Length: 139
Image (cartoon, rainbow, N blue to C red; front, side):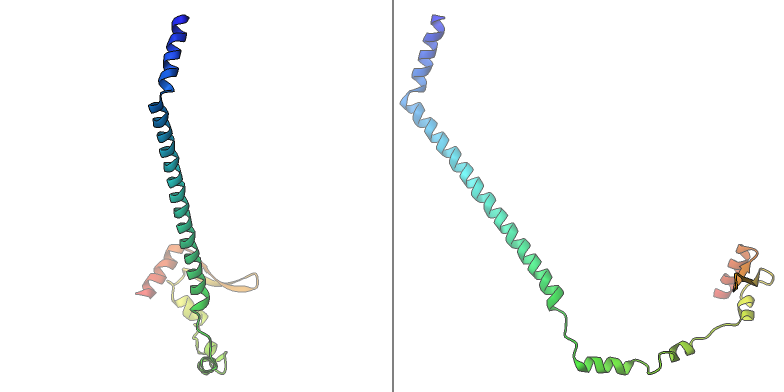
C-alpha cells in the first residue's frame, strides 16, 4: 500500500509541474477555439442556406405573379371577333352517319342494331369479326 501512495505522490508532482499545466491550458484553449470556429462555420452555412431558400421563394413568387401579362381591351375585342356568332353552327357542321352506314362498316351478320332499355345500341355476335371490320375500314 505504501508503494501505491508513493507512486500517486510522484504522479501528482508530475501533473502539478508548471510545464504540464501550461501544456494542458494550451490544449484546452486550442480545443475551445476549434469548437468556436466550427460553430461559426456552421452558423454561416445555415445563414447562407436560409438566404438561398428565401431567394428561391421570392423568385418563384415573382415568376407566378409577375410574369402574367395584363389583358387589354384590344385582346378581348380580338378574341370576341374570333368567336362565331352562333355557337350551334359549329355543331351543325359535323357529319353523322346513318344506321345503315354504321352497319355497313362491319362484316355482314356480325352485328345488329337493337333497342336496349329504350336506347338503340350496336350489338356484336363475335368480337373478333367486329375488330376485323374496324381494321378493314381503317386501311
